[in-house]
Image (tube, rainbow, N blue to C red; front, top):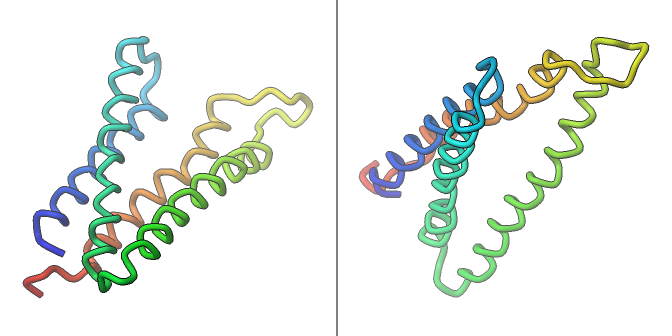
Length: 133
């Protein structure tokens, strides 16, 4: 992996993490502010597309289709896992046990899984060997 790949992945992940923190924890965001944060989050997470190039670069040409399919499968599986996982965390952390209404704090607790994943991915970026290493 070239150092430029690492820089783009790291920068995208940092921006995604910071905007996600803003989306979850900043109180009383206006519509425009929320839209801006969500746009920045979506734009910065597009840096994960480098994973396709990175994986294809690390394997021989004859396996490029398989590697691309496997990378895509992992990304899709994680998306499918996180949606019910966040719902389950909401059920676990619900503050008002007598009603089924979730509070803002319940969402703060449930969405922390996204923040933890972003921090873990930042750490993983440093474990990937560059072409110079």
